[in-house]
Image 1: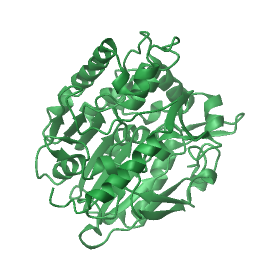
Image 2: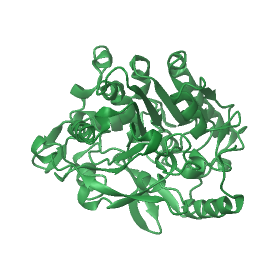
Image 3: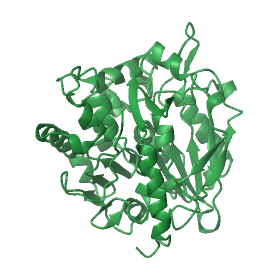
Image 4: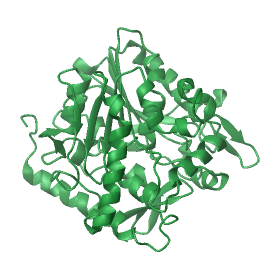
Length: 424
């Protein structure tokens, strides 16, 4: 690709570090909160995974939203929410990209109390600076279409995909994700976003679900003349049976929706005919979204494999353990089960895909969150479908350069994947 100007030796070094890092990580799910084990230290998984090894990434400082407290728009522990903003310039000065951070959910008082002592529940524990990589990079050779836009990462500290609005006074928990969303958008509008000519709402994992939930709300912030679209990366969480025939993820989502008062903030076009938990699943939302939406997802999503399809609770004897850690160790019958999961994903997006305004990039990889990582977003050997990298597919769709409905052939045909491999 013409705009890939970095040397291959540089990329080999970066990928060397990528695999060294992956070699010592794994994640668990505790009451709906995903945890990364890194050299024995517990960290929320996605906050680490969203950052890839890049040479001298721009470091962007945390801005706390001082007006949020008076509006009750606070993190789980009552601290102020925040975001990281890197200003655009030149042709991108009036273009805005909002990235909603991911990082699981908390579905019980116990898991939310645990979460409020982490950066996923309190700004006290948030990094004061974050590296901007992938879709947030400020380098044209790493992010060809959005590098000079105003780029924002909205931090995630509510545990319900920015959708709850309630509290538990006894447990000293504030479930104010919807208020955080609203106050953050209000603050950014006051900082110039109201003048946007172009805007893109994106998000990864729980943030990818949030970008679906808030897509039309985001569109409504702007006049009709503003070009507004949404991107959901690894947000296509399926209401699927686990390996024991149970519904692990549905049970978790039920806890999130009920505990955090999510129902009033779900689209009424869905809740008018389905229960609130069903309306937290993207498959029941995407066809009714009016704003152009792009779904970027691995067909064998690594998080869903470990936390929804074959968690320890559904696999007490550990028959699936090795398969969930390394796809190369999946048996033929396990691969067949996973092909059924992929087929279900393709079925639930069929109607969505028929709309000309929507876009798709469903690659047959064991991955999770591919827009924030440099090696998967845009690099010398990043994943492709039909020789087109993710960054170029998203850019072509956003700018209407081409219709993008890219669906990969089934595993194991794709040799460009950056599959996640975990070690116990």
